[in-house]
Length: 331
Ligand code: CP
Ligand code: NVA
Image (spheres, rainbow, N blue to C red):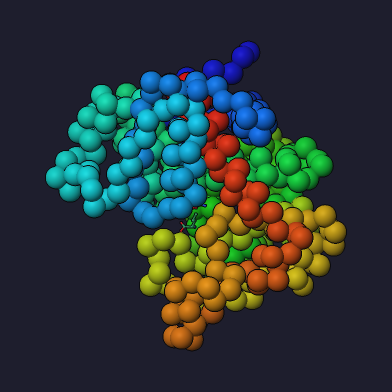
């Protein structure tokens, strides 16, 4: 049956079938090729989109804005300081008002329930631009990047996520790999393994039964062997900065370095990262924390800048995949 995603929300990949995810990836490949050829559909001419950000962003915000502009849609950006949402106006009322003005609503914030509540009341598609427990647009970009760099179907690809294995990216990966029949390993310290949300693992493993995926949690470096992708993320996500000392203590042995690349025994392994990344001392946060005695770099500069690293292709793909999500759901 032909896939039709018009009117659908994009809150988590768990809401989509593998065929629907395939459809969005194919659309993203197509839109990327068209942009390269200078061909624009302007399929969203006359449409308007609002972007709600309760946390900061570079890639996600710009990806949504550029995607909309390139497809002919108008964009409004609101951050937590410049709207009434949640402070003077309930989520329900906010969703109802914005749904009258706009054809689609992007939301980035803390609680997944907020994006779900917006979706319940907006009457137009709502897209998840990151919450504390998921980051589905990032996974679409990552899958696109894997397809561009690894000459294997997704269901033959092994992804090892190193570091904070209980964060939004780790969970988003569990869902993405489960849906696409992939081999996923969350590689981190035993101390953090016990904090991995059991319901996330259970839901991912339930899907995996049908797709042939494998979803593992491991503290044994032997899991690196055969990896096609080494992935990492910052050790303290937005809103968790007070946990930096504890995370540095636990995660320093999991900093991605050349030894870990070698442990994969795969000369074609690629390194990926959702970004932003601490890989050098060129940020105020890395410097401030270093002055306090905490080296927060989750990957060495050597790996980040190596031939294995595909992080900027991945960042570019945020725009192509987000454009595909918008076009598929409201175009
Ligand atoms: N990867 C990602 O979501 O980046 P931003 O926080 O810059 O949007
Ligand atoms: N885990 C990170 C992802 C940033 C894209 C965070 O939530 O801050």
